[in-house]
Length: 361
Image (cartoon, rainbow, N blue to C red; front, side):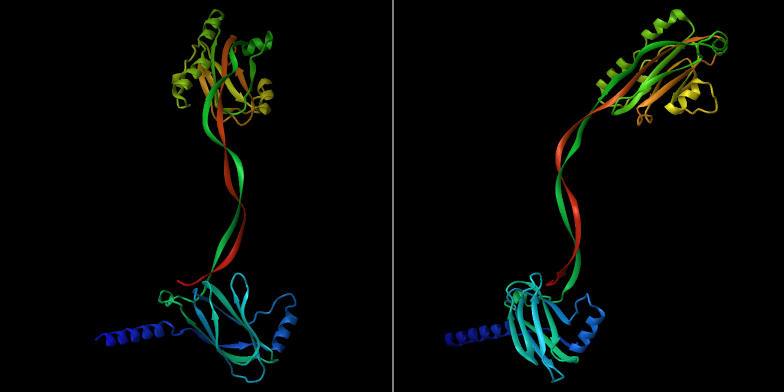
């Protein structure tokens, strides 16, 4: 029994070895190789280009043995073959003068793509047949897919730069105009007795202004001016609510509105419209509706959008044609105090497209 079992095992090993080393067909193709005359004519028409000789491109697994068979239908003349490795373009096999190849073998050291390029030494085209086979090194690569597809990928070059990144923000009230009182004459008195029925207050916004506020009140009672000014606490109110909330998420009703007794008009102007307003050239000047109020005795106004420029004016008008009024105003800006950290950021500097082979799957 033992000799028979031993013999059976030996036969099994021989059969397995024979099957695993049996050549596997990769391709068999008929190709036409352009002759020297056709190549010369093409190069004459394309002096700055390289002629593209016929080629076959296939991938092979590490350990494979490539087998090349080649026959020529036209017996005159000899052919040329070069087998190159993709990437390095190193020549792994070449023959510059042959008519047939019978079982030429090339050992594959690593999985890669190989290009088989053909030319002829004859003046006229040659009709040929090429056969490629492979002997896998192991059963695990027996089903290796030798067909090659080409995929375009992006090859991106990066550089490291330092950038400042905001990590936190704090908000700080800044007084632009402490509570002040100004006399604005009536229209008739300004005409007959002098004085002004329209005045303005310049506003210089600091950098990083997020929004700004002004409070106002009007009265013709001179004895009430100082008492009214003492109620104007816009700066202290804003400081209090920002400290409490840590943000700007609060309404006007959180601020103390001063008392008023008579009407006034206040317009938010830019430099281009200031002169026309003061010169009473009505119809020629424009104002920002967000920061303007008319026919009110007092109020608090928040301005969010008019922060991109630094220079504005509050134009104050007395709408009463008979009586002059005192107008009290306080102006406060909210400035962002940001804290930054320096971080390193990877940014692309160039993007190159390249074509790579996909095979073996």
